[in-house]
Amino acid sequence: MLVRVDPARREDLVGTALAVLAEEADVDGRLRLEVTFQDPRHAEWAVWQLGTNAEALAPQWLRDSLRDRAAAIATCYGVSS
Image 1 (cartoon, rainbow, N blue to C red):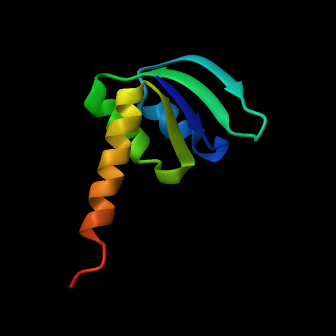
Image 2: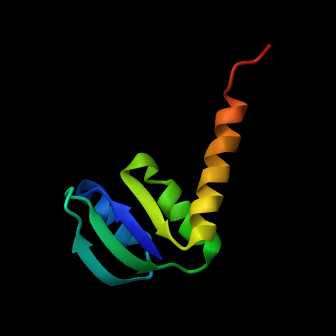
Image 3: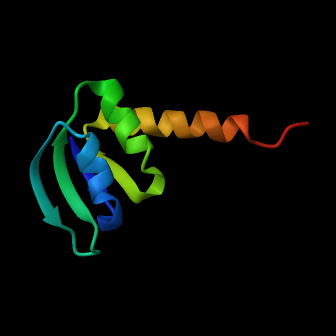
């Protein structure tokens, strides 16, 4: 899985991943890490914990899952009648 992360939160991501396969700095200062997790649920949980300090870049199912989760929370806290 490919994740961009704020360098200040790198250890939080790495501490939950099973392995870091590759790491490089992006031009904006964020880090791009290729990491592995135990399973899809673990991957979603790990990235979700970092909020806007991390962005899943791949695979697409992880991006979709995080987007759907954020949309459901936004709906829950949206304007009520």
